Length: 277
Ligand SMILES: C[S@@+](CC[C@H](N)C(=O)[O-])C[C@H]1O[C@@H](n2cnc3c(N)ncnc32)[C@H](O)[C@@H]1O
Ligand SMILES: [Zn+2]
Image (cartoon, rainbow, N blue to C red; front, top):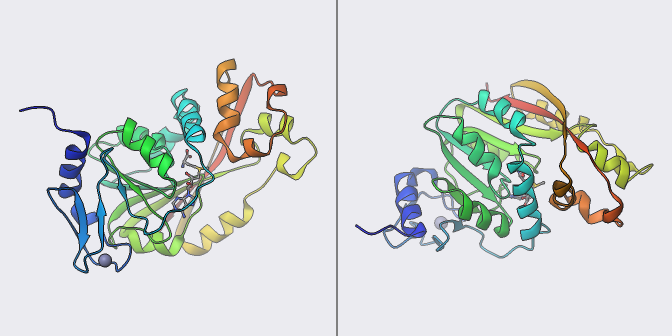
């Protein structure tokens, strides 16, 4: 038997987990055909692309997030900057189905799933460039272009919903979670990439920020909430500095990027864990 194409492998994987999908238009269940079409009973149909992902958007969206930004993010994550965070997140996970909402180029989900035996990773992002990169580099997961606020998944499906440095929609997350599932949201704190912000935005309001309101909304949305703060500073090699500038929307607002010199960088985030009961 010859080697299966990336698309053929994805078709098999999506067929195996077809119960995950619900039509983003009418919310009916979906079937996955041998030819790579994902279709509901009302005939809303979406194709599995040759790169192995599905685009569930019904109209194209212009994302501010570019191919270069996602490549830079992948480089920085591969450097190990977020390893401690990923380990901490994985330690909170039990169950099989993990959905990463706003997964970007997929590195966090892929690296977290490596640490959770038997897990099935599903990533959704509205930026096609992110999902293209995820599907290219990380086989064995289900990658979807879609809107996390109106997602292409069935109710009561996921054991864990990840939401890392991305916007959230708690009503949709509650619809998607199994009754004993949990949402794990990562929110930046004052020290997050502070060396970069101090140089780029000295004395402006971008230099520091808090996320008190985000925590309050999270607490109002879930029954039981745990908060774990992760704070560490690591040395940064020179070749990663331009990638760090490119990987964050902050970089859009920095005028003189060449003047920035960084020898270390801080990760300071809250992990918010919420359950339905
Ligand atoms: C700062 S990036 C974080 C990406 C990734 N979680 C990471 O930490 O590398 C925010 C991501 O949220 C995605 N996003 C924004 N709005 C979205 C929506 N409505 N549905 C799905 N993804 C969305 C963006 O496209 C972007 O990839
Ligand atoms: Zn439909």
